[in-house]
Length: 290
Image 1 (cartoon, one colour):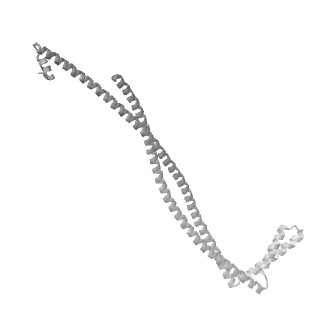
Image 2: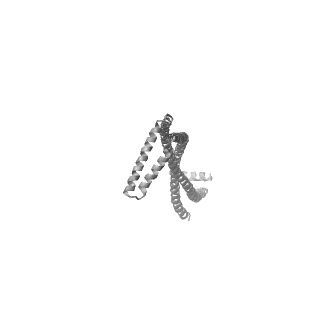
Image 3: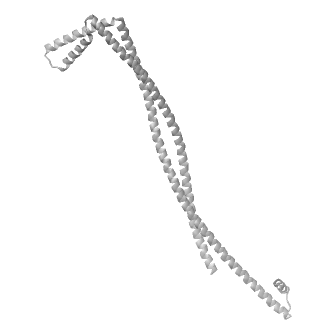
């Protein structure tokens, strides 16, 4: 009965060991998976730190360019104000000079624009159009003569030269503003792209971390099952050892009993006066009967 019981328990132990090995393998695979994910997460965190530094540097450059744009615009606006003031001054000088010459240059120019518009937009007979063209031509000549006279005035000539210089300065300053603003926009666009990359990386690391936690929970559950199987194996081993020990004790007791019976039989022969061999004497001595 004991032999059959031990055989059954040994089979159960092998089955349990097979299950334990399967759970151990699965647990180790989950640990390896978690380890690989942690490695990927750490590598992404290195990239995140690098991109954050790039964003900080890009933002600093963008803000610096924006500050320079602000300063350049202030300079450009100052030039434009001077240009506007000078245009007003020139207009006043032209008006005063025209009044002195008895001709209103502004009215001539207004009249010219009106007649040119009339020629382009209104239908008219060939004769009327011919007369209109002659009138326009005469006004052009008067304006040209008037401007030539005005240009002879030293104050007006100087103001016109200054106006030309201010216009060139304003145009150049505007180019500087646009150039710096373009660089600021490029840095801003780079920062937006980096922020997009950062957002994607953070989402990915969050996803990986969640998977790591889930995997570790699963690995802990599998490990717990593995330990349960190991404990069951140990319990079976204890039972097998206990049964085998009991079996050995019975066998030993049986051996001792047989030896004692043999010793008593020899002792009875000794009491009857039978001759004993050396081996018989040693058995009696061992049994404590001599």
